[in-house]
Length: 454
Image (tube, rainbow, N blue to C red; front, side, top):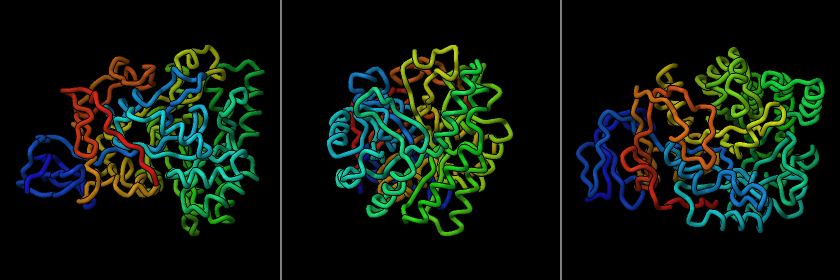
């Protein structure tokens, strides 16, 4: 049988572990795995690791901007960044676009905004807010969202009509009951809004300006308490939940304990929590501000222990870009909280996890691809297996380079990783058998990506 494409001689990460073999693609799906395969097109992957393409389960694209955020990250640049970074699919958050994705009409607007602008595949989160409990949840389910998202922390701009809004305890409880009926997962930003807002207000009024002070205004217990509250409500409602961007081991431990008790709950952390630490934040500047905040070195080590023990299901970017003026603040408390990171998940995680800490290639593939695909029921994604979508990232190990601003595909070329030496490189990214990035040709000019509707 002749195949459309064969990737030959690579170290391929299969479900059983890595093996040097060939992978054949026919009509966009994986058709055969083994030695001596023939195809119309051949990629020689000698010396490269062939991994499932990353499924980044936490990405913010601000398209449409609604006249308020038109210069933030759009689909064209956002998915180009994904392609260059080895991300073949991602889960798109229901904010910061305007309008936020909270009902059938706003979901339709989002799909139209992305039409013919996608270089990677996109599955959508629908939002849970206090304002869409009378039919919006079901409309989003009918419209094909893969999962739901809510904020227990304060979010959104109340001066912008249609912007996102955080839940109160009642709307979280009622929303969980409705989402449980869909069978889909509710992903949760778990920070105690009342306490973090007040501590931040006090610090600001006291003249604090540093990122270190910002971190101190969001102590560990303000993550742990809402995680416990969310788990309790999940027990009560039967809703499947996922805790986003956990930044402390104590939060992970709450999830582990609940799972042992039979609660359907998982958690993620982000690349930046495994890379940066508090004492270097002020030297980098507000470009590295995020929420929950980046904690100290001891916490970073403990988070790596949780990743390597398998307690953290997957790692995401929480790519949350904005315009440079919103980061360029003297006072850290006034700066936008969000990190641009989707282009540097795969290379940083391969270097920090596999090369520096001995993570197995199987675990690497699980935490960047298999586990997020499984959690959000993206059935055709996440593994190199016959019948799955032919989504690959080819990685060159032990190939250090220093990231420069001009390397970034983002609309606004700001990132805390600029100037850092990263010890591995993404050589090529393939989506359903089609190359969407290579070091030789750059990012594809086409838009082969699709919305994944569930």
